[in-house]
Image (cartoon, rainbow, N blue to C red; front, side, top):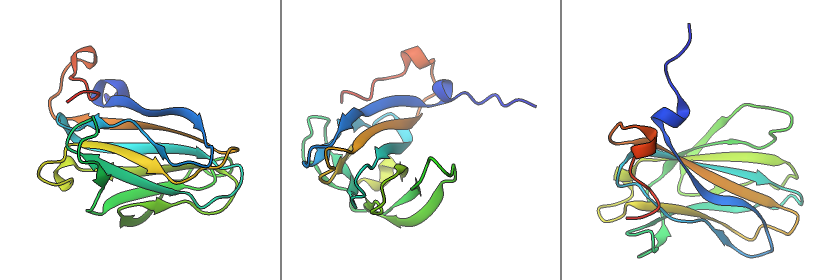
Length: 162
């Protein structure tokens, strides 16, 4: 029996960071608004060519500008796969406010599950930062938003503006 679930029809998909190469500097993604979302899954793909223990830090703000940007303070669910070339299993990690990648050269996926209600009373925008990925390391990220109001995909409210 086939499922009626369709990812692009049931979730808004927003690019946070296009594929980018590290250069020894902190990478910060674009900010998006969660005003129209029940939940968000921040999905980060990391190609680790040097085996650095990079810290992935979800951020929150009161506007996509990003006004009042700071690290999240409530713990969130985290999943990761630290060797995607040899395994396709996501492992649920200890809930936390950030996640440090292991120091192994491998392709990795990390997922943060964020409930907008846990961001705080005035915060409704998110992004993430990655500490100093090296020149041989690549990162990209998308966010899957479960919309608060169901609508046609082409007519759903934007998450790129407040």
